Image (cartoon, rainbow, N blue to C red; front, side, top):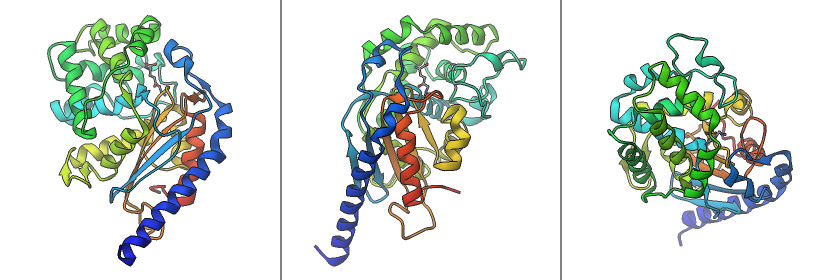
Length: 328
Ligand code: DON
């Protein structure tokens, strides 16, 4: 091993040790949240779990804590469905049907749908926006639309992920808010398929299984403006990657997006299962690890009142402070 390679290797090893230490330090914040209970199958996750994976521009992978757990994407899937619709039907087509403005409201709020006529969901990261986006997916059947979303994920991950049927079925049985949103949207002419199909697609995408490494992979591609630095392939158009990161930064952590932007400062998307996907674009501070950009996946199922992983947010804040991840 030449000297440069050895130094790089040692630096990466050091980063991994520090990350592991930070995970141990931040586990205490899991008690600040609770596992989502309104989706019956999520109730049984171990609330003390905390795992993280970071993948850098040069392919370095570091992990900390319980990093091999499989969990469902939940709202993180909204990023994938939005990008799929934009790629298949055009960004302007998508934006005519769903806006990109933060709401400051809980993710399942119905309130603003009635305030504007015609109703147009404020952004694709809240449930109203994501149900609309699910109906816009290319394909004439719910199976075809869902397959289009899986195609995007397969392109990003290099494997076709599967659905946790138990999570899907258990959420559908209690999805009263989502059905209410979908009926409201359908009445306003926003859906391009029937309510039942839009809900089926949306809840199925929420039940797609991933690991923190999968989230880090997608985060890395977004961080690199849609270019995959390891395969040298362009997976997403630049303007779509930038738009998606802007929506993640302003709306991805719901009514905690402002605070998250202020104290972590990297485009991120959370899900009620406790996952967070973060894209860290290249920064100017050359002395910090991952200054060429990286993707981060975090999992800790105890969530706070905004629906974001309690320990996951704290851990990301700490990593951001130590390694200067903020884009600001
Ligand atoms: O529709 C729901 O309520 C869930 N399937 C997803 C919500 C979610 O993940 C919000 N995130 N923090």
